Image (tube, rainbow, N blue to C red; front, side):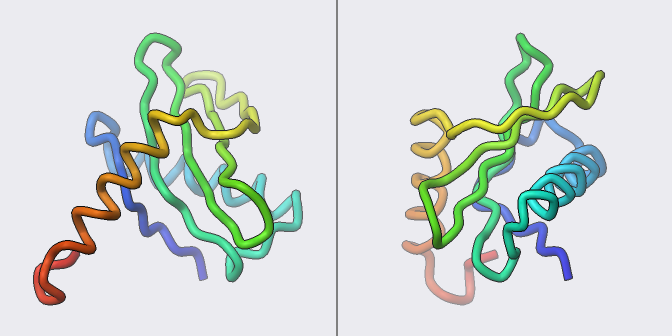
Length: 105
């Protein structure tokens, strides 16, 4: 079962497109033989100037990874996440942790 949970989501992107791009990213991770049980999505970031969506993934084997997908061509590129992306995600993680259990999403 695919899990679409995210810590951070750039709300300039519509939910349907985020799901479509995450499905493409899932396929790439599957090809690389990463097991979804041992990792989790962190965030979806939008770089407007390049019309590219960056999806970050963390797993128990290595440092976080990033899958970048161009919104028009759907060309996919693997990389390591930028520090600013990780900082946004970590801030959201800390915000969620500070909420009372009933208030967490």
